[in-house]
Length: 87
Image (cartoon, rainbow, N blue to C red; front, side):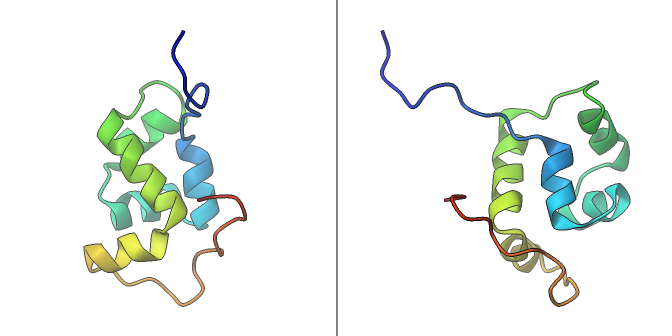
């Protein structure tokens, strides 16, 4: 039996986007996704690969840092503060 922290919870793309407060089009544009691909993920017709899931984790935890790294500006207070326990 393998030791571990249990099954990994898969990031729900729609939840990640919703927490940013952005529309699908805004999220896709700001974070470099195709709108069509984002829609496919949210509707469950496709799943993001492991690299994209890692990117979504970073977006979910530190959206402002990702925006800064990408050189994209966002309106002040555009993203809610990190949720407790999201470390």
